[in-house]
Image 1: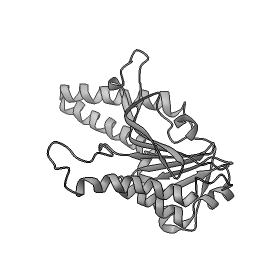
Image 2 (image 1 turned 90 degrees about the vertical axis):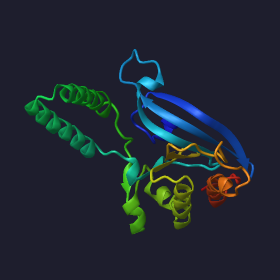
Image 3 (image 1 turned 90 degrees about the horizontal axis):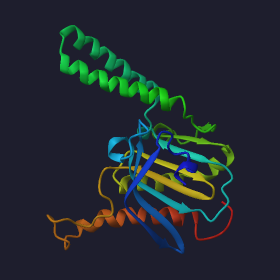
Length: 242
Protein backbone atom coordinates (compact mmCIF):
# COMPACT_ATOMS: atom_id res chain seq x y z
CA UNK A 1 0.00 0.00 0.00
CA UNK A 2 2.83 2.41 0.82
CA UNK A 3 4.38 1.79 -2.61
CA UNK A 4 1.06 2.27 -4.38
CA UNK A 5 0.33 5.47 -2.46
CA UNK A 6 3.28 7.26 -4.17
CA UNK A 7 3.95 9.16 -0.94
CA UNK A 8 7.64 8.24 -0.92
CA UNK A 9 10.20 7.84 -3.67
CA UNK A 10 13.43 6.80 -2.04
CA UNK A 11 13.30 3.71 0.18
CA UNK A 12 13.87 0.00 -0.17
CA UNK A 13 13.37 -1.36 3.36
CA UNK A 14 10.75 -0.91 6.05
CA UNK A 15 10.43 -1.64 9.77
CA UNK A 16 7.74 -1.04 12.36
CA UNK A 17 7.43 -0.17 16.02
CA UNK A 18 3.84 -0.21 17.29
CA UNK A 19 1.11 -1.10 14.82
CA UNK A 20 -2.56 -1.64 15.48
CA UNK A 21 -5.99 -1.67 13.88
CA UNK A 22 -9.02 0.17 15.21
CA UNK A 23 -12.66 0.42 14.28
CA UNK A 24 -14.75 3.58 14.30
CA UNK A 25 -18.23 3.86 12.75
CA UNK A 26 -17.66 0.35 11.32
CA UNK A 27 -14.56 1.62 9.50
CA UNK A 28 -11.38 -0.34 10.23
CA UNK A 29 -8.25 1.77 9.97
CA UNK A 30 -4.60 1.03 10.75
CA UNK A 31 -1.98 3.12 12.49
CA UNK A 32 1.67 2.07 12.27
CA UNK A 33 4.76 3.69 13.72
CA UNK A 34 6.88 3.19 10.63
CA UNK A 35 10.51 3.63 9.63
CA UNK A 36 11.42 3.67 5.94
CA UNK A 37 15.07 2.99 5.10
CA UNK A 38 17.29 3.50 2.12
CA UNK A 39 19.92 0.75 1.96
CA UNK A 40 23.02 1.96 0.13
CA UNK A 41 24.69 -1.40 -0.47
CA UNK A 42 23.29 -4.84 -1.21
CA UNK A 43 25.26 -6.45 1.63
CA UNK A 44 23.58 -4.17 4.19
CA UNK A 45 20.88 -6.35 5.69
CA UNK A 46 20.20 -4.57 8.96
CA UNK A 47 17.99 -1.42 8.95
CA UNK A 48 20.39 0.16 11.45
CA UNK A 49 23.03 0.22 8.68
CA UNK A 50 20.85 2.24 6.32
CA UNK A 51 19.72 5.82 5.92
CA UNK A 52 16.36 6.66 7.54
CA UNK A 53 14.09 8.29 4.95
CA UNK A 54 10.99 8.57 7.13
CA UNK A 55 10.12 7.97 10.77
CA UNK A 56 6.62 8.52 12.07
CA UNK A 57 3.00 7.39 11.85
CA UNK A 58 1.34 6.04 8.73
CA UNK A 59 -2.45 5.98 8.93
CA UNK A 60 -4.42 4.02 6.34
CA UNK A 61 -8.19 4.36 6.07
CA UNK A 62 -10.35 2.49 3.52
CA UNK A 63 -12.49 5.02 1.67
CA UNK A 64 -15.38 2.64 0.91
CA UNK A 65 -15.88 4.89 -2.09
CA UNK A 66 -14.58 5.03 -5.63
CA UNK A 67 -11.44 7.15 -5.93
CA UNK A 68 -10.70 7.46 -9.63
CA UNK A 69 -7.31 9.15 -9.58
CA UNK A 70 -4.26 9.39 -7.36
CA UNK A 71 -4.16 12.72 -5.51
CA UNK A 72 -1.15 13.65 -3.38
CA UNK A 73 -0.79 16.35 -0.75
CA UNK A 74 2.65 17.31 0.60
CA UNK A 75 3.31 19.86 3.30
CA UNK A 76 6.18 22.11 2.22
CA UNK A 77 8.29 20.88 5.17
CA UNK A 78 7.98 17.23 4.08
CA UNK A 79 9.87 17.66 0.81
CA UNK A 80 13.64 17.93 0.41
CA UNK A 81 13.70 19.39 -3.06
CA UNK A 82 16.52 18.48 -5.49
CA UNK A 83 17.77 22.06 -5.66
CA UNK A 84 18.13 22.14 -1.86
CA UNK A 85 19.87 18.77 -1.91
CA UNK A 86 22.31 20.04 -4.53
CA UNK A 87 22.96 23.05 -2.33
CA UNK A 88 24.04 20.69 0.47
CA UNK A 89 26.43 18.95 -1.93
CA UNK A 90 27.92 22.27 -3.01
CA UNK A 91 28.39 23.33 0.63
CA UNK A 92 30.12 20.04 1.41
CA UNK A 93 32.51 20.54 -1.51
CA UNK A 94 33.17 24.13 -0.36
CA UNK A 95 34.06 23.02 3.20
CA UNK A 96 36.18 20.17 1.82
CA UNK A 97 38.27 22.71 -0.13
CA UNK A 98 38.69 24.78 3.05
CA UNK A 99 39.84 21.75 5.05
CA UNK A 100 42.26 20.82 2.25
CA UNK A 101 43.79 24.28 2.49
CA UNK A 102 44.10 24.02 6.28
CA UNK A 103 45.36 20.41 6.05
CA UNK A 104 42.93 19.19 8.72
CA UNK A 105 43.27 15.47 7.93
CA UNK A 106 40.52 14.09 10.19
CA UNK A 107 37.99 16.61 8.89
CA UNK A 108 39.03 15.92 5.29
CA UNK A 109 38.49 12.17 5.69
CA UNK A 110 35.11 12.61 7.42
CA UNK A 111 33.79 15.12 4.92
CA UNK A 112 35.06 13.09 1.96
CA UNK A 113 33.17 10.00 3.18
CA UNK A 114 29.99 12.04 3.68
CA UNK A 115 30.34 13.64 0.25
CA UNK A 116 30.88 10.30 -1.50
CA UNK A 117 27.87 8.85 0.34
CA UNK A 118 25.65 11.74 -0.81
CA UNK A 119 26.92 11.49 -4.40
CA UNK A 120 26.10 7.77 -4.46
CA UNK A 121 22.66 8.53 -3.06
CA UNK A 122 22.06 11.13 -5.75
CA UNK A 123 23.35 9.03 -8.66
CA UNK A 124 21.70 5.74 -7.69
CA UNK A 125 18.37 6.99 -6.43
CA UNK A 126 17.45 10.47 -7.61
CA UNK A 127 17.90 9.54 -11.27
CA UNK A 128 16.32 6.11 -10.86
CA UNK A 129 13.23 7.23 -9.00
CA UNK A 130 10.85 9.72 -10.54
CA UNK A 131 7.67 11.27 -9.28
CA UNK A 132 4.39 9.94 -10.65
CA UNK A 133 3.25 11.94 -13.65
CA UNK A 134 0.70 14.05 -11.86
CA UNK A 135 -0.48 17.55 -12.55
CA UNK A 136 0.22 20.19 -9.94
CA UNK A 137 -3.04 21.66 -8.63
CA UNK A 138 -3.30 25.26 -7.52
CA UNK A 139 -6.24 25.92 -5.20
CA UNK A 140 -8.01 29.18 -4.46
CA UNK A 141 -7.04 28.94 -0.79
CA UNK A 142 -3.89 31.09 -0.72
CA UNK A 143 -2.90 30.08 2.81
CA UNK A 144 -3.20 26.38 1.96
CA UNK A 145 -1.11 26.83 -1.20
CA UNK A 146 1.66 28.41 0.86
CA UNK A 147 1.80 25.41 3.19
CA UNK A 148 1.02 22.49 0.85
CA UNK A 149 1.70 21.18 -2.66
CA UNK A 150 -1.06 19.18 -4.36
CA UNK A 151 -0.67 16.81 -7.33
CA UNK A 152 -3.35 14.77 -9.04
CA UNK A 153 -4.25 12.86 -12.20
CA UNK A 154 -7.77 14.31 -12.03
CA UNK A 155 -8.02 18.02 -11.30
CA UNK A 156 -11.81 17.94 -10.89
CA UNK A 157 -11.77 15.10 -8.36
CA UNK A 158 -8.88 16.71 -6.47
CA UNK A 159 -10.79 19.95 -6.05
CA UNK A 160 -13.83 17.99 -4.94
CA UNK A 161 -11.78 16.18 -2.27
CA UNK A 162 -9.86 19.20 -0.98
CA UNK A 163 -12.71 21.19 0.50
CA UNK A 164 -12.26 23.81 3.20
CA UNK A 165 -13.65 21.34 5.75
CA UNK A 166 -11.07 18.68 4.78
CA UNK A 167 -8.23 21.22 4.91
CA UNK A 168 -9.31 22.13 8.47
CA UNK A 169 -9.22 18.45 9.47
CA UNK A 170 -5.83 17.99 7.83
CA UNK A 171 -4.49 20.85 9.93
CA UNK A 172 -6.07 19.32 13.04
CA UNK A 173 -4.23 16.09 12.27
CA UNK A 174 -0.93 18.00 12.09
CA UNK A 175 -1.62 19.72 15.40
CA UNK A 176 -2.71 16.53 17.18
CA UNK A 177 0.45 14.69 16.16
CA UNK A 178 2.60 17.77 16.78
CA UNK A 179 4.31 17.69 13.42
CA UNK A 180 4.94 20.14 10.60
CA UNK A 181 5.54 17.41 8.05
CA UNK A 182 2.49 15.59 6.72
CA UNK A 183 1.71 13.77 3.48
CA UNK A 184 -1.62 12.49 2.24
CA UNK A 185 -2.58 10.23 -0.67
CA UNK A 186 -5.96 9.32 -2.14
CA UNK A 187 -5.46 6.11 -4.13
CA UNK A 188 -7.07 2.75 -4.91
CA UNK A 189 -10.07 3.59 -2.70
CA UNK A 190 -7.77 4.29 0.25
CA UNK A 191 -6.71 7.41 2.12
CA UNK A 192 -3.21 7.35 3.62
CA UNK A 193 -1.54 9.90 5.87
CA UNK A 194 2.18 9.96 6.74
CA UNK A 195 3.08 12.15 9.72
CA UNK A 196 6.78 12.57 10.41
CA UNK A 197 7.66 12.49 14.10
CA UNK A 198 10.28 10.89 16.35
CA UNK A 199 7.92 10.94 19.34
CA UNK A 200 6.43 7.70 20.67
CA UNK A 201 2.79 7.93 19.68
CA UNK A 202 -0.32 6.91 21.58
CA UNK A 203 1.60 6.73 24.84
CA UNK A 204 -0.37 7.71 27.94
CA UNK A 205 2.43 7.82 30.49
CA UNK A 206 5.89 6.68 31.52
CA UNK A 207 7.91 5.83 34.62
CA UNK A 208 8.27 9.50 35.53
CA UNK A 209 4.65 10.69 35.30
CA UNK A 210 1.48 9.61 37.04
CA UNK A 211 -1.27 7.92 35.03
CA UNK A 212 -3.82 9.84 37.11
CA UNK A 213 -2.70 13.11 35.50
CA UNK A 214 -5.30 14.02 32.81
CA UNK A 215 -2.61 15.66 30.66
CA UNK A 216 -1.18 12.23 29.92
CA UNK A 217 -4.39 11.32 28.09
CA UNK A 218 -4.80 14.59 26.21
CA UNK A 219 -2.43 13.83 23.32
CA UNK A 220 -3.77 10.29 23.02
CA UNK A 221 -7.33 11.60 22.80
CA UNK A 222 -6.51 14.37 20.32
CA UNK A 223 -4.65 11.97 18.01
CA UNK A 224 -7.55 9.52 17.87
CA UNK A 225 -10.23 12.19 17.56
CA UNK A 226 -8.36 13.86 14.66
CA UNK A 227 -8.54 10.53 12.78
CA UNK A 228 -12.22 10.15 13.65
CA UNK A 229 -12.86 13.62 12.20
CA UNK A 230 -11.48 12.48 8.82
CA UNK A 231 -13.78 9.43 8.83
CA UNK A 232 -16.78 11.56 9.79
CA UNK A 233 -15.97 14.19 7.17
CA UNK A 234 -15.94 11.77 4.24
CA UNK A 235 -18.69 9.58 5.75
CA UNK A 236 -16.40 6.63 5.13
CA UNK A 237 -18.84 4.24 6.77
CA UNK A 238 -21.16 4.80 3.82
CA UNK A 239 -20.49 3.02 0.54
CA UNK A 240 -21.33 5.85 -1.80
CA UNK A 241 -19.43 7.86 -4.41
CA UNK A 242 -17.20 10.67 -3.26
